[in-house]
Length: 164
Image (cartoon, rainbow, N blue to C red; front, side, top):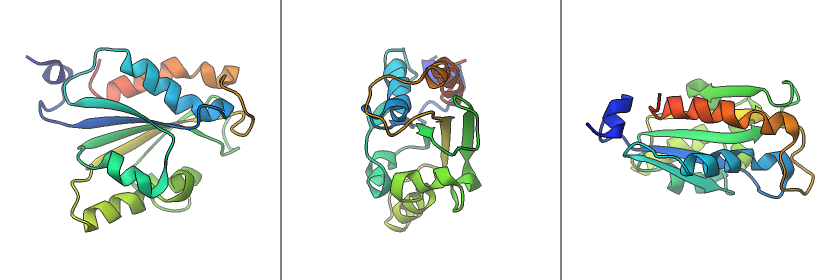
């Protein structure tokens, strides 16, 4: 039995974990930190982890060819306590919500465009976003509340990709 089938994923399922952010803007590097830590682990077959400093339309090429995409990023909504984790999926990516903008272009728009172009786009996209303290100050360190959320988000992502 392969690790993917042991974990409950379909053996041929292609999953992308996409850690997003900017490594020199303090808490904005959260997704990159999570991706780096996850890459150091033994992952099920079919799971890939990518760090990305790009967003918007450029996400199209990263997401195509996967059945599921799990995005990890920082969020500066001002409506949650620092370090609080939010999970988004499905209809959450449709207009209105701050995270739906995905740094310049709505994730739903990227998915719809890919489908219209005939690309093999993911059937499921979820995002884990941590409420940031600071995404504007130059610095490579996460703030304490955001750094404290890394392990919990790692556990949530492990669950999403079938590692129990």
